Amino acid sequence: MRREHRFAVSCLGLSLLASGIACSQPKLAVCDITQRACQQAVYYHDLSLRGDAYDPFDGLPPVTVITENEYRAQLEQAAATAAQSGPSPWDEAMVLLHFTTNNSSASASADGGTNNDGGTGNATIDDEATHTYAFYDSTQKNVTIISHPSQTGSEVEENAMITLAHELIHSLQDVELNLQKSDFQTSDQYFAYDSIIEGDARFYETLFANDLLDLGYTQSNIIQAADSALNDYYTSLGDFQSSMFAARALVYPLGAKYEATAYHSGGNAAVRHGYAKEPHQMVGFLVGPDGRVPTVTSGEVSPVPCVSSLPTSGDTTGADQFGALLFYTFLRGWGVAHDVAFATAQTWTGDFLLVQASADYATTAVAWRIEFSAPPPTVIVQALSATGELKVSASGQALVITVSDSATPLAWTADPACP
Image 1 (spheres, helix red, strand yellow):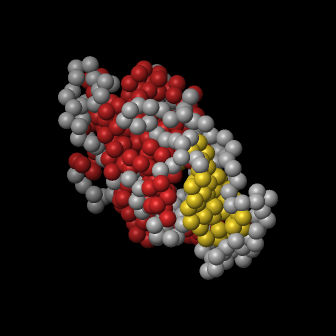
Image 2 (cartoon, one colour):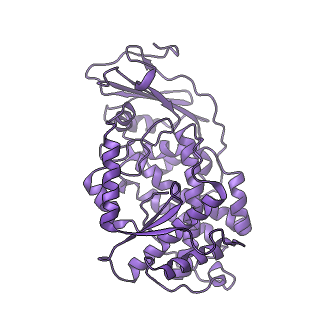
Image 3 (tube, helix red, strand yellow):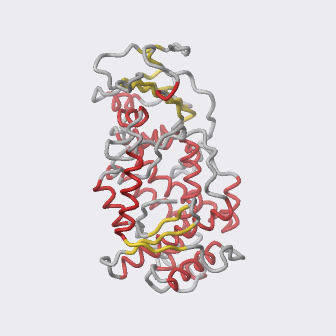
């Protein structure tokens, strides 16, 4: 899975226990991942950490090493290809809701969004080319390593090894699960699938870093380590350029918390069994400090308002469910405090987002209805309405948010048969 990846370790000051997971693995030597011996060392350590009793690749999956300039050229080509199709109503809708910015990814929708990881500007491409050490491509079934000759030192090599450990986990997952499966009906389902896949890789990446850097994580304190890393994300959401970008970043630590909890209860076998019962909506991953797992009760959502003067068929419209995770990061982006946003997202029971556009794509209208198991706090309506960009109404246990780029007010109607 092509992902820019940077590893950050929370210093917990935890003591190393004799029975801990760190003691069960041989000491790793820092090495250069562009060299095959180093690649093999990382791969076999991954196998050891996961408790795999067999080697599905008989040594090492296919690995290609390219230069930073070659990777930058690939990113530029991909951006140019994506730009040829031009903007869509969904792209504009995501910007109107502040899900994305004009410089960030267009959409994570399962019904036709671009689903890119980052923006297409030169600055974004340069940043990704500079900071990506490796990625796994599930279509080509190989790992690509990016060589950065100008980056030297043990810290660079450590981060590169940890990243490679993460990507090699994806190669192992692909043998077991087939990562090319794409039967997602909604963005919420995609986020949930991504959380279990990336959470698995992030969790074992953390165990790998534990052995490499002597972090002191054990089976007894691994949940505390996962919570600490997740809290770091919650407190730094302002550093992300958009709600969508923040949501995509959060699937890693949220999934890792899910896997750490499984590992704490039953080791590697429990992690494997987790794939049979993982949540299919993101609300199931939003477990707070109290350990309470939100009840997943997603069902039919009442119709959202629509605009009778805009088409509701063909290429100009679409609908999607984005789920509790994006709702949480959306609230944070509009200035709602973490505690309020998280607690409200935990009560999510369903949402429905409709995008409409005029036949010439000159006007886009968006309506989003989110339903909860309890009435949402009034401070949320106040925060979302503060700038006047969004029209927000609360009715019982639901929020309805509408926005458009029309120069004149649109005539919204609640008639489900609209137009």
